[in-house]
Every structure is written in structure tokens, then in C-alpha cells.
Image 1 (cartoon, rainbow, N blue to C red):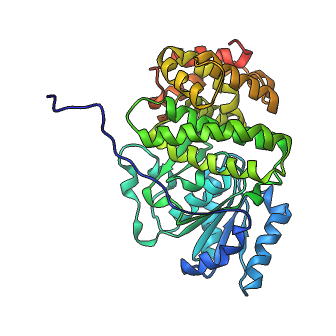
Image 2 (image 1 turned 135 degrees about the vertical axis):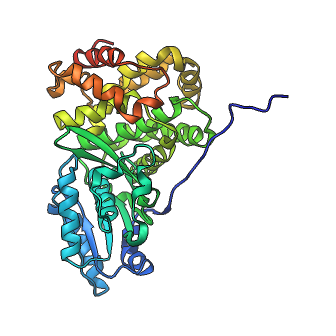
Length: 390
């Protein structure tokens, strides 16, 4: 009998989640449990103008507390945004962070909380080797994550994607303690999303589960969660794009988003490897980039994922168990929910294709792609995605 086996892995799963309509009312009690008396609510510039934030303030005022707000965050949050948030936290003498919003706000908030007690610069904690061990854990700040979109799943993640503007590169900042202490997942908070943001973030959630499922390696828990999440997305994403007030569908999408982020600890792939530099260079929406890139990456990977796509087709209850049936489902759904067919439709051209391909090849997500890729391979996929050549 052999002493070796392909069945091995190290697995981690996420945090406490308070899920359901109206659960946002419990936010002050969660702060009390975590001994947070002066929270800094970190959000983005779009949300700060909406009634949602007023409602949060009212919830705290009912119990005699006030919250301060920091919202100087770009759609692709930068190192400078994190630095400004740290200054706001210290100047206000705060003792906890509420991450309120989509992936950008939550990523920024987690990075802010990490950096409060550090003497090193943010980039020293990029997810390379054992850089995470450089973190001084003596003064880590508790984070409560409150997602208002169903896409990134950053609320159940141990990392933040932050844009290094000078390097024109998105960098993953990682430490196990970046995991929020609590998640308050209230589908009511996602009702106000526009149809186009709902579509783009929902496709981002799909990309997480799909790339995790396709990534090689033995992680049956991640695979099972990814398959379940993709079934929920198939049922619910077109519904929430067409009827944003459908709370059942909103609930499924919010859960599927967290499930995708839980699953992708197994690995991601070329969609994200390309989306990261494209987002850094062009400032495009991350979820929309993944949505556009998806069929082109799948087609390139077909030779390595054919069998998995047959199993996925069965799980999705498609008529045929084949790669083509899954690809056609994705193409049809993209058209139904208004996703552009190619990158040229969002003003991304081939003028920096060589540079983007080099950056994609060096991106950590590249290692999880089921088919080994070179810079030239990335150039082929990117060229096809720019002009719509499938």
C-alpha cells in the first residue's frame, strides 16, 4: 500500500454570521459584546449619501450611542485611503471598526483595523511568503462587517485587496486576524442596489465559486460549497437584477456571495489574475471585469476542466452534461442581466496588453488556474476578451 495520497490539505472556515432580514438592529448589541464603545464606521463615498447610513446612526442613537464615519475610499481602495482611515481612527480615539458597504469599503476597513497598531508600512504585509508574520498582534482592532452588496464576500475573508497607485498594482494584504469578529448580513441592505451593480457583483460571486471549483487540489468542502452557491446564483441572480425588491432572491445572493469567498481559499485563477491588473490600471469595476473575462478564461481552460463542467452542469440541472452547456448558460445569463460582451465595450483596449499580461502572470491568483499559463497565454486570452473572440 502506498504511503502517499493526493488527498491532503489545510483548511480554514470563517467567522460568526448573523443572517436575516432586520438583523442590522442587533449592531449596537454586537458592539457591546465586543466592548466597542466608540466605533468608526468605514464606508464609501456613495453610501455615505444614502438613507442606509442615516438608519444606522438612528439605530445607535436609540441606545444612546453615536458613531463617526470615514468615507474617503475609492472604488478600488488605495494605500492612501487606508492611511487616511488610520488617521481618522486615531484622531477620534476609536476602539473598533464597522465595515459597511461592498467589497471596497470592507477591504479598506479591514486594512485600516490591521494598520492601527503597526509600525511597518502597509505593503510589508503583502501576501507573499510569511510576510503576515511581521504583523504586531498586540493591538489588533475588532471589525464588524456589514455587507451591502452580494459579490466579493470580503466580510468572511482574511485579506484585503488594496491598490498600490505608484506601482499600478493591486496587492493582497493578509493576516489570519483580519477576519471580522462578526458579520451582520441583512438582505434588506442590498435592496437599494442598482440593476447594473447587482449584476456585476453577482457575477463576481459566481466567479469566486466557479474558479474555486475549477482550481486543482483536494478540498471537498470548498467544492461542495461552490457547487451549492452556483446553483443559488443561477436561481436568484436574474431575479434580483429584474426585481431588486425580491428579498428571497436577495437573501440567496447574499449567502452565495459569502459561500464563494469561503470556497475560494482553495484557489482562484486567470479571471482574477487578469482582473486585478486591469482594475489597477484602468480603474474598472472588479466584478464587471470578472464577468466579462469569464467565458474567455473558461474556453482557454476547457481541456483541463471538461469533466468538472459536466458535473457542474448536472448540479445546475442543465439539459446537457457538457462544457458547452455551462458556457452557454453563462453567456445567456450575461446577456439577460446586461453584462457587456467584451472589454472594448468598457473602453479597455490593447494598448497596454503586454504589460497587463506580465502582471497577470505574476498575480498570486494565477497559481490556482487549472491550466498552466505563461505571459503569452495571458496575452491570447486578453486579446480575445478585448475584441470578443470566443
